[in-house]
Image (cartoon, rainbow, N blue to C red; front, side, top):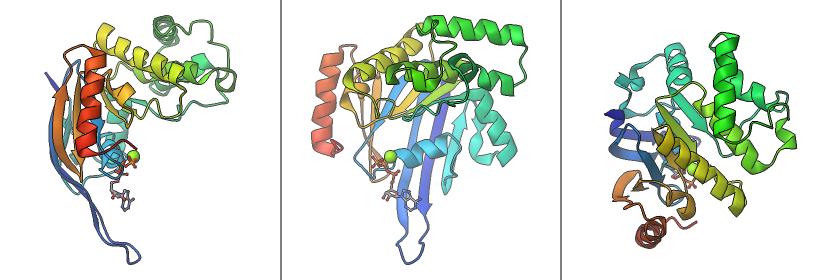
Length: 251
Ligand SMILES: Nc1ncnc2c1ncn2[C@@H]1O[C@H](COP(=O)(O)OP(=O)(O)OP(=O)(O)O)[C@@H](O)[C@H]1O
Ligand SMILES: [Mg+2]
């Protein structure tokens, strides 16, 4: 079942103060099916952030369509788009985006509180997810009192709390040491394998990408190549390095 479909997406940043027009996305099309874990890789400037901003509704494309769960979000007006995002999309950001004035449990609950769910249901869902991510002892702590890897797991729990159709992860290992990077990638894999979450992740990092099941390489705003994993992470990692050496994107 298709969860995400993008059709011939283009993004042209118009010229500004003498700077030239930039075609950041030049006719990108691909689909992501339910329960897939797809990575987007490509050299600096290839259009990864632009793509994620459009997919998540932060920015508008110049042309083309973005369809999430059969809804063409390119056509939604601002308020409906915001509501659609809150109900259907989960985000894991590079810098966590946790609120320092709320404790861990409150941070995870926030999307449900905004959605006016009943307190019993909130309690139950939050407890389940905290157990799932092994952070059940951190509920009363504040973000500034927990480690980077723990913060990422809190962010993952918050991303899942609404039972989203798809999760967008933006460089989730970007700010982490290698041990925490390993923890968060295992966490995302666990979400994908055990609760069938559909994940689309943008990353520079071949280690993080090796956890994906499929990777789409983009360059100059176009899809250049696609590779799939046979399940052996080490082998997939080597394959990623090989493609990067041809396409670029090691930085
Ligand atoms: N707001 C903007 N105005 C004009 N040009 C932009 C804007 N944002 C991005 N660009 C240009 O669009 C192209 C794609 O940029 P984008 O940020 O999507 O790349 P990226 O793949 O995320 O790169 P990185 O790996 O360095 O984060 C680049 O040429 C960039 O300079
Ligand atoms: Mg970027």
